[in-house]
Length: 444
Image 1 (cartoon, helix red, strand yellow):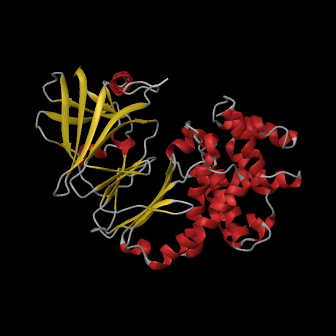
Image 2: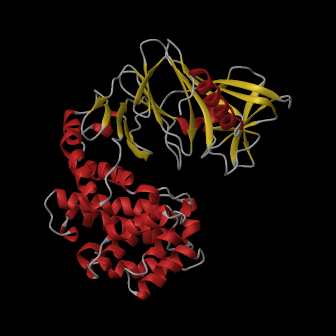
Image 3: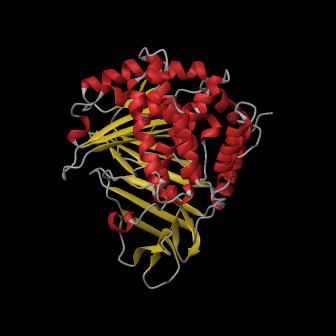
C-alpha cells in the first residue's frame, strides 16, 4: 500500500509531534557566519525551569552566557544544572551564547572538539534538556542544527546543508559542522584533521583496518560503516592531552595542545585506537548503564585492545607482550591502591571512574586466563553476554556474571557473582586474589 505525499506528510508530522511531546523541549544549535555558537531551548508550554539531562559538573554556569539578563543557570541540589528566570516567573524559551572550545568533562564527552581548520565536532548529548526535570524514561530529544552557507553538517554519516532537524535519542551522537568533507573507504567514513602528524595519519591508515579485520573475525561483523572523527586543537594555557570515545556508529578522537601530538608513541596510540574500536564490536552488551558496572565494558575493551595488539604485532601469546605486561602491571597496582582504604568498590568507582579501566582490566584478564585453561576465552564469554542481552537480559555486571557459569569453575563463578551483585563485598580481598591468579610474568 502506498500513501499519497500529502497523507505521508501528515503521518510523519503527527509522529514527530508525539515524540516531541514526550520531552516538550526543543533544542536549536546554531553557528553564525562569524563562527559564534548559540543554543536555544523552547518549551511547548510555560515552565518554571529547563533542566539539563547531563550535568557532570557546573561548567555551564561559567561557559554559557544567557542572551537575556533575566535568566541564570543554577546547580540544583548538587545534582543537575537548570536554567530559571531570576524573578521566578514561568517562560517558554531561552537562548545562550556558548564557549566553543574543548573542555574535559568528568564522566562525559566534551561538548566541543575543534578541528584546526575551524570545523567543529559537537556532542549532542550536552544539549539535551527537559521541562522541569529529566527523568530516567526521557530518551528522545527534538534537535536542530543550523550552519552558515558553505559549511557541511554531518549527522549519522550524511551531509546536510544550512539546517537539519531530527529526533535524537539515548546518549546522542557527535555532529560535525565545518567545511571538511568526509572520505568513505571500505572500513570507515572518516574526517581526519589535516594538522595531525603524518606519522599519526599513517598509523590510522595502516593499523585501523587491521584492528577492524581482527575484531570482525572474533566478534559478529558490523552491519554498517562507522564514522571516524580525529581532530586537533591548540591551547593557550599549555595544557595538552587527548580523549577518545565511541557513540553508536562513531569513533572519535581529539588531541589538544602541541605536546599531545609531539613524539606520539606508536604502541600506546595503537592501544588507544584498539580500545575504542573494541567498544563498537561489544554490541548491545556494551551499552551498560549502571556507572558502578562500567568495569565490565571498559575492562573488556582494554583486554580486547591488548589481545589485538599482541596478535597483530606478532606476539604469539598475550602474556608475552611487553606492552600488555606493562599495562596490566600498572593497572593492577592502581586498582589495588584504589581499594586499599575503601573495600567497597561501588564507593571507590563513584569517586574515581578510572578504576573501571584498571580494576576492569585486572578482573577480565584473570577471567580470560582461566577461560583459556578451560578451552574458552574472553571473546566466547562476551558473545554469551551479548546473546543474553539480545534476549532481553539487562546489560549489567550481574548478567555478565550469570552467563559465565558454564565457562568458569564454580569457585570463580561464585566469587564473580558476589562481586557483581553485592556492593558490600570486600573488593580488596577479591581483587588481590585475582592478581595472584595471573601469570607471574605479568603481575610482577
